Length: 248
Ligand code: NAP
Image 1 (cartoon, rainbow, N blue to C red):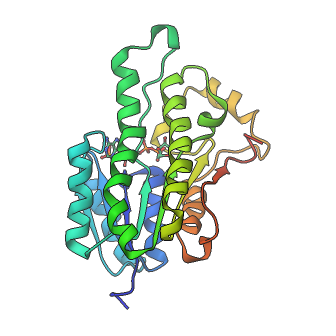
Image 2: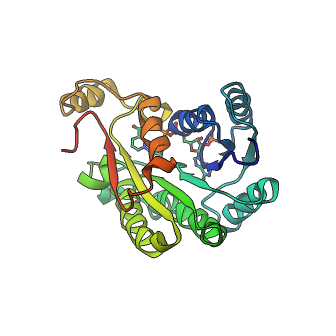
């Protein structure tokens, strides 16, 4: 059974949506590698919870995916332990919000480096072995902001729109090898990332959500787990919004 269990790598798996994705994949019997940037204790807690929920194996790997060498070393570490990767979820993401007029080059570069280049580096590193085995699932966490734009988030919106274009290109390049590449675009989800928003912004955002509530990380994770499953074999190059109807 353990031999057959799919091998999943989730970037930014220590908190929020990434944590929920790790647990959802574990509950489906996958082995789970939990990547994190700095929060080792949180990542270890996710590892233990993955094992409790049914993962045949789970472990934490520190790597800053914005550094291409570290992203490659991350994939190498997972491949070394399991002999390959079947499912890659590019979830690691940051915000450095500010109006375009005042946005610094550093804040622009930092967001693009983690959110877009990090996903590029991890995809490129898993691609060759996935092509060889003729099976793979790649799910990239975009955002409704990448579809619609958002005040104060030009860097973040660019990174999330970039992920969509990159995923569609990869979907076309990899389809013949049995590898699907899709995006999940969450709306406004209750995590550390959104906890910092002032009450006035939360109230204004709620007014734009037909389902009139914030989403839960588990609701995003369920969509990711579906796209990572064998059942989703005929879906590629898509963007699945999990947003309470916000972006329709
Ligand atoms: P979060 O709670 O802030 O967690 C971010 C995760 O990413 C953490 O595990 C963090 O690791 C990791 N991380 C950050 N920079 C990293 C790096 N350079 N290398 C490796 N890992 C890194 O974020 P979230 O709200 O769960 O969001 C997860 C994803 O969904 C992001 O891509 C985000 O853009 C997207 N999203 C979120 C929402 C929302 O409403 N929350 C909406 C749309 C899209 P440490 O714990 O070690 O810091």
